[in-house]
Amino acid sequence: MNILTIVIIGFIVLEASNVVALYFFPDSKMANSVGVFKAWEKSKQDPEMHNFVKYLVNWVAGTKLIFILLLVVILLAADEQTLLLTGVVLVLSIAVFFWRLFPLVRKMDREDQIVPKNYSSVLGWMILAMILALSAAILLLYFR
Image (cartoon, rainbow, N blue to C red; front, side, top):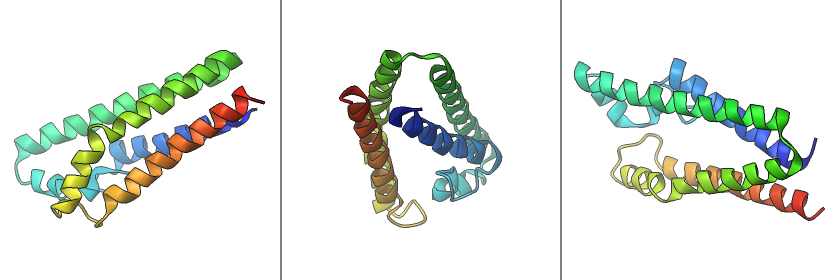
């Protein structure tokens, strides 16, 4: 097992914890569930809005699950070149977070719409760390 495989397994574990939280514990403030957003509780006051929000939360969880299972298949069946390309694609797809989602979550954090305060910073650093870990693993595998 090479370093990139180990880092991808770590990513799978992180994402799987998020899928479990979103499907079974959406009120949680752990595992990047939606309980951190004050709007989640507010949406419960309007059943129509809450159903819509729950639909979106479950859609995200389902999409993440597809992503995880595809990564498992790749890890089980891919050759080294495919694994390297998978790592590159993961870095690019994860980095998209900083284009649309990070500015939005940072804005909500600044406007006191998230508990705990500075959640956006912790999330941003965590995602950056994953990008850096994947990038380092790609380089180590490629240049070994």
